[in-house]
Image (cartoon, rainbow, N blue to C red; front, top):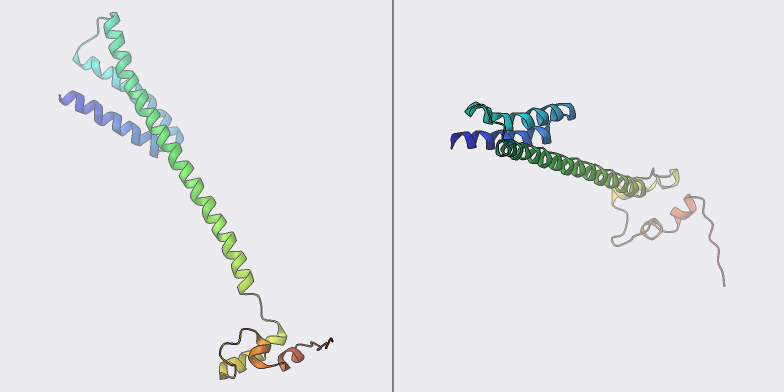
Length: 150
């Protein structure tokens, strides 16, 4: 029973090594465990190389191949998730930059006299435009002309 537990632990470690390590380490780790799991049976005695023993070694080898495939699948999911998060962050940064560009444009020189008036509280509550807040002299200070049409 302990021998089976050793194999299960080795296969679990194989999945972790293939999933988390650099590519070169994953290849070496997967290859070594692919050989170690079937050769682990040799500790119980040399095989008689019959059809049954070769089939048994192949079956144990398939377990290690399965562990490598599961590790590679989880590795691919991790990489896909990382790329998706990076793409989402990039999109959010672009949206934020666009929003900030709309909100934080430099104040033109014609609007700079409004700052002290706003600080003094001279504006009326509920006014949503500078002309409504401070009157038509703001437009005149900015160089605008009034055009009256009939």
